[in-house]
Image: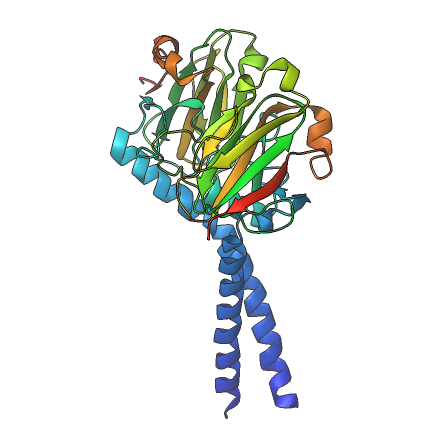
Length: 192
Length: 174
């Protein structure tokens, strides 16, 4: 094999591997953003040129026009607290306490980041719906049918993701987003 | 084997370069497509006060069903753009301006303004703006200005619309 052919082949192979790795990284939901807190993934410096190239690409692909962190932090989960993929054929209970922010919401999306049609049109639960005496210990059920006071509809069997938005997060939450207490996601019964 | 050392080094460098270039280009490509879609649906250099998000009506990925969005895809190539965000009392609301590569050029919310409206003029570095205007320098001509208003319930959209629909973006007259 001639030297030119060797170099050409390896150049093409390198380009393909590099591009493929980037695409695979972006397909892994929010893992590329770097910060892990239980089942939740988030990033730093969102909306700025200082964010990592992987964070910027992930946000553009999965959360275009996201707010910078002084306004909001976005935590995203594609797995439960035991690391199992979130799928619609299982019921889930999300339980948490006070989130150190002015307001928070939990929203369910399909694996591409879009709301899933459901007869009740229930896609999210926000802190405004949580009574003061529940604020330190609340639960939200994710299931096909309502099972509790706070419920998000998951109408079919497809994989899904949850996004926790914390608007006007405290300075402490911003600084400790990788270890601050965040809601747990527990899997319940699954349909066969 | 030694004949392959050079080509392997080339492959490694090419892989790193391709990985970085793919990730780095992603925001620009996606923002460009989003801008075109927004401009096609609602025009540009005008504020579109979009209906509440539903599963059947989602313009942008990962929309929040708890927010009312007003959006202005802009192009400064002909003139600077004036943007006014009108307060919605007792609600979280914010104005964010994104450049063509998804970076935030400006953001303020009700917490910052303490109930006052936000008035800014978006312009490229070489464009003149009226004296006293609050100029936000954009790195290039295209971008998106986005107003978010948090709803306490979806039923209050009528009351919120009375405030948010006073917000606007419009080219500055020469």
